[in-house]
Image 1: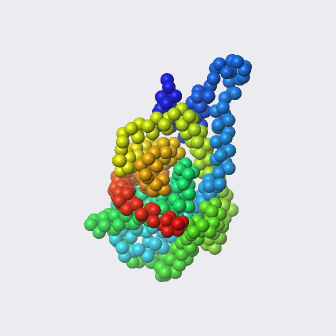
Image 2: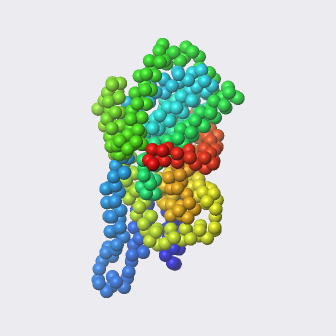
Image 3: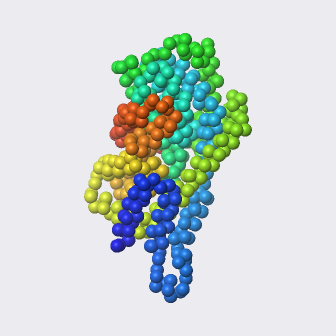
Length: 454
């Protein structure tokens, strides 16, 4: 077999192994080291010099990639943002926010669903942890919606779709990962993703309000006394004590990043201090909650680091075998237009989202398309925002649909997985609509970075 053929075998073996349920990060490392050993293996040289089987350059490659991950300044922001999000989650600050927004929007059709989406959007700006957002809202908002006689599938779709907004809305962990893979400034990516992120949240809310106006039985209006029972007699006071402190903290963190007052890591550290102070002010900070937040942050950060180590090793060996060049030559030989190339790339990413999670797609498959972007005149920043929008689908589309499984894990026993999948489908259409709007009006993503950083 030629080296490019071995590269394709390597890629196919990886996908098959993941589908069989093997751990992703260690599969990446194992595949990278195994196929890399084949690439560097020189039997004649080993016999001539008399070296051992372990004298192979692939082990040096693994060590170098590990050092590159550990010493990467951009990735330092990941544990900081994770810690900020876990503090806010464990201190029950999001609970206050949801009930405040629910009462404030009580006169709107589908008020509780709108409040849930708004809370998800706010929480997404405080953390990029998809599982945490879906799980927390599944424990908090989903039972409240079912108690208010909301349709089960409709409610489940709201929670799953809203919980995925953290992929796109800054400070998204996915955007940090893409910035490292694509060599694009994470600050510019954050600026570019801000408007599309809230545009998608707005489309979700428009759909919810429109759908409930057409079919009010999906979301019965709450009684006035129910809203008062949740918050007491002062909705305004509740908003002041729950919404505005968190909003100020988020604006400070994102503003510091977008306007260059601080690096993402420095801004994230400031956000951590702010989250701790908020938790203390709400008298919600305990030693157990702090310890849980530290443990969850360390566990998730370790997962991200191992993913990077494995993926960079895998990608390096795949490139050495000529895999990237083979795919690039094939795509360029098709003589596609920029629009056709974008549609093809996004379709492939959409299909990969069925069996794979966003991390493997960003780290393994997106870099295959990146070298082709200059040929088609596509801005890597614009491409990254399109990918981030597209990856919402990987959490909503069966059979993977991790947001559905997160929700099923905390939902009442009578809620079936098929009902959750059914409720997510209309929101999947909203994602596609957002991608079309973004392609037709690319300045939605490109305007803010140009204004701030010109």
